[in-house]
Length: 229
Length: 298
Image (tube, rainbow over all chains, first blue to last red; front, side):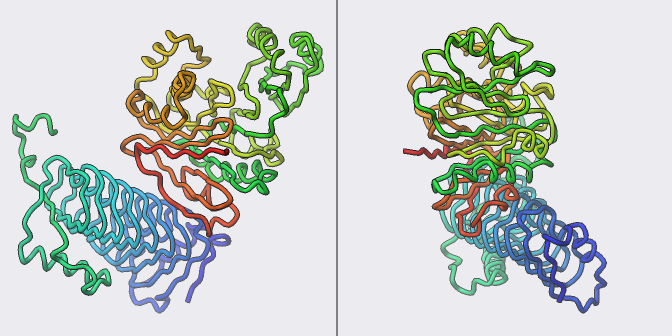
């Protein structure tokens, strides 16, 4: 069980060790101490390993992750799990802005709040935020589900494509071309799936959520929408 | 980029360590700004005296200056020298004549700040060099603000370094860039304010000084800046007994804060807070966009 103390080991050395792991590695449980807000911890892992990070992390933790399951016992800085491809990133505290940005797959769980631009340009990642999310979240979101148990800030889903946003609390305002939509049985199943994968088995009721998505008025240029571009 | 740190102490027992804590915080932010660095320290007030922090030009001898200070003030002057910076402490009635004399010394001496408690030290260079040069780690105080700059809107000079001070015991540091600073500067100049640089951040400082001179509180001055200043900003502002934070409405520039029974701390990144004592027991949070956060000592 490799343990790395980031007061001793450089982040680059840690990441290189993680990058060297073969697909059938036996070193499947990693523990990282003293992250102290350092940037780019555990970026670019491509192996089915568990990584426990004991403390607050800086920018881009778990970025580009494939397969690995990272648990951050603290807060995360800007861009946690940005461009994640698969696997899991679980933030036990709060996340700063742009959490899960451009993520293509996998699951990002944030136990606390996420700041502005959560899920910006998400492309297939699923994001579960147990607290609230900040302004401009899911901006230009393309695919995947953003599930929020708390409230959403201003301009939710501005210029959204085909991602789905499920919010249980209040939405301060919707962005351009984002509207509330009725949930189909398929939507309800997708929401239930994210909640289940996030460890919520029945604690959050599907009926308490409202779904938001694209009105599809911005897909093609239309002169009447000129003010919205 | 640019890096900001700020520390407002609630626990008086920590006051002797203020400079040391602020030094460590500022050095962690080196990668955010290698051009220049500076700090404002709010130390002890000395009866009815006012402190003038000056910067002397290279080659100016302090020995020669001492007699000139006394002559200009017409009274005794306490002089404290830290590298290129000189802090003069004079009885308030003598400060005006000293400042008149100073305004004729351009090229030799530059007035950096005026205040009963505040002193500002800033220079071109990396944070580590700057804090060592001024002996920041030995300074005590109630609160302090530091900045390390990556220049965008004006040249890499000591005058362009933060903090900026445009009023007594008032200072501001800024991460971001303002787009309407020329227009705001012109209108403040019409109101009688003077600026010493072309820098956008100095305009923000001047704007707040002007609002507070009109009777607005620190909190209200910052609230109105949201409609009057256009651009990207995270501001951290100090007054004699206050400390405040404001981010622009889209939170363009990073900010993280911590509050405990001992202190309120600000950092551009969490790394700056990680060096503080008992940070594990503080509440760490990200300030909301377009929301004024302010603390005051009674």
